[in-house]
Image (cartoon, rainbow, N blue to C red; front, side, top):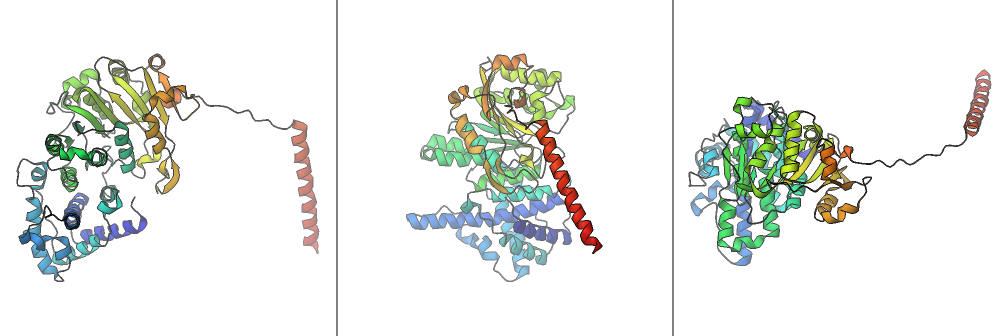
Length: 490
């Protein structure tokens, strides 16, 4: 998480951009990202060199011998702002734009029109010093410091969140990935990918749990070229996503500038896993939406259309873990009921995890849930597992400070052993509901519809006893008031 001290440092860098004439927040984020990327390339190279020195082999270099001066650790110490500016503008920036010579790669497509906009050596020098002092080292902290930084930067954009676009917290992404357990044979898509957080977490999971895939030529080829897909309509996010994937060792992810809901997206039964937090504040023109999505749920609401899209693009047997606003669970419109019926009756809904409204604070206070389902095309829902998440390890206010209470380990563990959940009572935090009961309730998936609250009777003392206590208290007050009056007369 971004701390107060780090926020202050980022704010100072932002102010340097602003006072230097770069006032468009998205321009600030892009230029910030390029420099951060250049710094992280140096860190990756340094780590490779250290590993190679220990194991006694020649490292796979990002910076060849003739480009060593392009490394952050070299140019930040030049001591001459004008020389550093000339080096970065004329050599380092063109170098990073052309890192992938393959013009078909996602990186090349979205970095091809990247522009270095920092106008003066003095401003560049201040920004480089500022970024160097941030202390971000994702490689060593095991977290997503870069992603947290993007989240904070995006919060400064006046329009951030107006289309439902806000970053999914890394610990929620990790929970979802841990629950679906991706495997080396999966083909994975996030149709509203943003900075590629879900895809990054999947590759982390595979490296931890299936590291042997890199020993197999076919699996390694699949990992680097055909496993990861992402769509977005924000070119800034596409650039960030492409850089993010490259830094995490995915050579050629299939990242596309695409409106996933439009007719131009012809994907059908292509993917084995969907992980997504699609925008759910939008309302689209029906003419712009793919006709086969409207057949499933006739609506303009993006949150319902995305669910129809997930069912279309998944292969038979493909699974999805997706975040939806609470309204999807209980909305009474025909479109809401249509999509819930489609998932429950014609496919297999496994689980609904309700999350508290503070999970996306301070950027949004909307209540959300995660749906876990499998595309079968032939039904299969028998029981649905519900979990009422009350804590995610952080305070549920705008500060989002770490706290002890955290249901996530329990959620992951219980999801991995659903058979044991059938004996749990409706008064507990998780329980199972038979599909027939859900059908009889208009396919309502809100946990409060099925949860039972255990009322414990409270025994009060007799009325005469309560009145006696009140009278005794009144007498005591009157006595003390009389004493106070006597004191004031002296």
